[in-house]
Amino acid sequence: MLTGMQIAVIGGDARQLEIIRKLTELDAKLSLIGFEQLDHAFTGAVKEKMEEVDFLNMDAILLPVPGTNLEGQIETIFSNEKVYLTEDILLQTPGHCTIYSGISNPFLNGIIKNSKRNLVQLFERDDVAIYNSIPTVEGTIMMAIQHTDFTIHGSNVAVLGLGRVGMSVARTFHALGAKVKVGARKSEHLARITEMGVEPFHLNDVEKEVSSTDILINTIPHLIVSASVLSKLPAHTLIIDLASKPGGTDFRYAEKRGIKALLAPGLPGIVAPKSAGQILANVLSQLLQDELLKRKGKVQ
Image 1 (cartoon, rainbow, N blue to C red):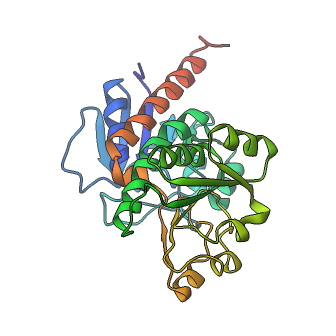
Image 2 (cartoon, rainbow, N blue to C red; image 1 turned 90 degrees about the vertical axis):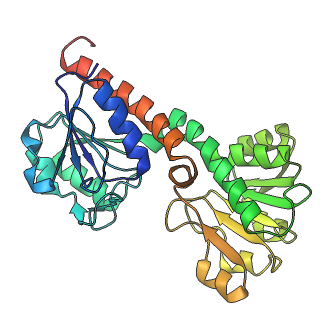
Image 3 (spheres, one colour; image 1 turned 180 degrees about the vertical axis):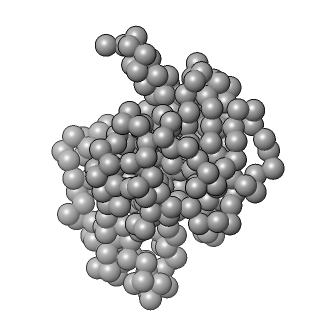
């Protein structure tokens, strides 16, 4: 239970509703910022504006999966108002206050460091990333079907990166009958790709290896699908970039070449917000309960 714990939930999409539901069931007291257009009411949760919140007694702050942008603005699907997280706000909180976000960026890292607060990035956790790869893969399949005029079965699919998402994507497209090859750098990843029954290649050879690709799926969060790689792709290739913004594709050059390239971060929140929200809610509730027990001195 989270009885007595005060938590600020700031912004977010439909995934946050599952988190709010779970935390109120555990008897936490919630301040909801950026939810004034939400019709549903939760017992134990109060809609407030940022300037109305008593951050002096806040035990935790929950940000949406993207965290903030580089100016500190927080995405608010259920509000038309612009909401910002600042260093001054964090400095108002007690020293034990923990900030939870899906991912981070230089701005968020900076205000966390300056305020000497603790940041937990949920998507750095293996359990969250693995569970989250399930709706991500389903969304990727949906996009592949919507934006091609050929079947996945029998198509040439290249997956870049063998992280938690890359592995799930490669396995699923292979199971659907695609001819899958996966690019990676680490020798252990290349060995795992071979063990999975798909074709491995080193990312140094990406230009050569993608020359007959029908669907290119990138999971690497830095520029990997460069202009030189794009120049080697067939014109009909569909690129689905699953990396966090701004992705790992040169979208300008893709458009110039007439190659359809789609940036698709946050697919779980789009295709399966309830399931994706429940994944985050379960992990968050356990982390918050552990934190509460520590503060009560029940955990060494």
